[in-house]
Every structure is written in structure tokens, then in C-alpha cells.
Image (cartoon, rainbow, N blue to C red; front, side):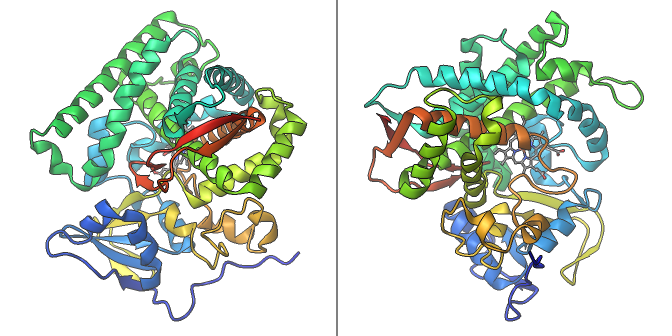
Length: 453
Ligand code: HEM
């Protein structure tokens, strides 16, 4: 097999460019608030590094995988600092997904052991139990909103794998409600940090959600700490973790890590699952292949860790979903010194935007990028060399690459296979499904009929 190098963009496309359509004062903010995906999708036509305006400030969007790799692999030169991250840290604390480069290495080292592959079967067992319980209340003929269902499932899985069996259903429901309120508001606040200066009902709801979220996390961590012992859950492993100097995570750090883990893990995976159910219902051939696989492997039961190697097509479906609708659709970085990107010198303090959504829809890397084709990584000939060069990056790339990627792929594969083993889902509304860009790219709503297979 010949290995192809990733193609450069066609020569008619400039290396650097500027997005048209900026409004006076607001710049491109109206586009980013009203139709962000259309706007992002239009940018590669203007260059590989495209300047946009966030109000009066410029930001530079990375529209080529090589540039994305350059920026994302250098955490020192392109750090998670600046107003966007300060806002996230004020809201969420200084955990692994929000901390700047200076704190990152120690935190990553303390967190990594809890994600070792030997712990995965244990987490996958907890996933199997929770998936089984979540599906118990499904009945033929019911209409359920799959965005809500999948969010309930993945927050429960995140909380149970993190805190073990001791936590009550009521705790989980309360945690989920405050998390949901918070997540609904976070994208708007990232773009318009001043929005909470006005005493609107929305601002009050957001502040309440955030406060509720913090209180619940603090209480649950406190109770779990009082229990002592590893308990085979993630939190026990974090409590036991030591850095190079023998230091443990402080109380504050532990709290921030827990908050970040639930947050980073729950809505991302639930949105991937919701998109998977939507796409499968709309693509009969992919659905038939999925049913054939799960019938052979599961015969109607809930999937567990031992089934994973044989759920090959299910895994492909999930990866193709992550290509089309990468939950982490935009991630900013700030340059910490003057630096050259795509031949352009950018001053220190420049905002750079990494967007898996853009990279995953570049036709040079993903032929017919709009089409859902789970078989594509076998047959395109572009993979694997090009894909590995940051054109397929749902979990990011470089030192901050998702620590929970295998956890997430396992959970999504087990959940999709278990659902498909028993159920066929069909849209219950004629309204087209839209992508709602919150902090995560999520379907607006997904009411579906449950049909027993
Ligand atoms: C489909 C599901 C998921 C997607 C698409 C996803 C995506 C990502 C991406 C793109 C990053 C890089 C962020 C950056 O560069 O700033 C990231 C980081 C992270 N993710 Fe995930 N993630 C998923 C699931 C999870 C799960 C299940 C967990 C935990 C159980 C998790 C925990 C984290 C953490 C802690 C980080 C920060 C890593 C670091 O900065 O060292 N994620 N994720």
C-alpha cells in the first residue's frame, strides 16, 4: 500500500486570509452566535489561517491540519490563557481541562494513572450496569428525547465511575440539573463575558446553576473522602495519586478535577451518542450493518467489556459520528510570545482557534465530507497518514489530547450497541434536527419513537 502525504490546499487558496462580513464594532460575533457552523464552514475558502473579529479583537482560525498540529502541540507558545480561559477557570476551577501550561504537567501526571488501560474493564463494567438500568424504563411506543436520555445516561456513568456505587439517584439528578443549566449558558458567556452584568432571569439562572453545581460536587467529594480507601473508582485513585515529589492533590485541586471530569466527560459523550442515534435512523444501510453485528455479538443483551473487540462496525459508526459532529467543536489558544504561523507574524496575546469541525470537513482529507460513511477510513486511501496528521482530531492533539478518549469510545460503543440490540429508533417529529453549538456541539432536540426489534 502506498502512503499518501496529506495534500496541501489547492494553490488558488491563500495561506492567510480574512473572513468577510464583519459588522462594525461586533465583528463576526453575530455570525458566531446565530449560525456558527455555517460561518466556520465558510472560512477555509479564505485561506489556511483565517482572521476573524471577536468584537474589536482579531482571532486566527486554523483551517489546515498542519497548522492545527503546530499550534496544539506547543502548549508553552500557545497556552490556555486569555479572557476565555480565565472565565472558564473562574467558573470551573483550575482542573486538567482548564489549567494553563504551567500547571498542566503535574496535573496530567497525577491524573494519568486513573486512566490506565488496566482500569478500563472495571469502568466498562460500571458502564454496562448503568446502560442496562437506563434502558429498563424504555417501552415500545414511547417517545423520548434522546438528547436528554443520553445526557442522563452519560452523567450517571461519569458520576458512578468517579464516585462508585454509594451516590444516590437523587444526588445524580440534582447534579445533572445544575450541570445542564450551566452548560446551556457557557458558550454565550465565552463570547460575551459581560452578559452577567445585567440582572436578567437568564443571568440569575446561570449563577444559580453554577452555585448548585459547586455545592453538590463539594458535598459528594467530602462524603467520598470520609469513606477513605480506593474503592476501585476514579476518585479513590485520584485521592491516592502522588506527584514526583510525593505530593497529593490538594482538597481544592481534587474538587476542581472532579468538576472538570464530569463536565468534560458527560456532555461530549452524550452528544456523540445522540448524533449516532439520529444518523443511524437516517441511513438504512448503516443501520442494517449495525443490527447484523449486534445480533451476532449480543443477541439482545447489554454489551460489556468483553464484547468490545467484536463490535467493530459499531466503533466505526461512533468514529464517523465524531468526524461529522465533533462535540468539542472549537478550542481557543493564546500565543504567549510573538510567533510565526503560516508565514504570518502574530503578536503575543493573539487568539488562535482550533476547530475539529472545520478540519473534519475539508474535502482534501475527507472526500464527500458531508456524507455519513462509517466505512470511510478503510476505503478512501487518504487514511491513515493524513488522518494522523491532525485532520481527524475529535479528541484534540498534542499534550492536552483528551485523557478520557478510550473511556469515551468504550462508553459510546457499549451504549450504541446495547440500544441497537433491542431497539429501532425513528424520529417522532418532522422538524429537521439542527446542531446547537453550546459548549459542545449538540442536536437541538431529538424526540424519537421506540420500536422493539
Ligand atoms: C466523545 C467524548 C469526548 C470528546 C469528543 C472529548 C474531546 C476532548 C478534546 C478535544 C480535548 C482537548 C482539549 C484541549 O486541547 O484544550 C479533551 C480534553 C480532555 N478531556 Fe475529553 N472528550 C471526550 C470525553 C471525555 C471523557 C469521557 C473524559 C473523562 C472521563 C474526558 C476528560 C478530558 C480531560 C480531563 C481533558 C483535558 C486533558 C488535558 O488538558 O490534559 N473527556 N477532550
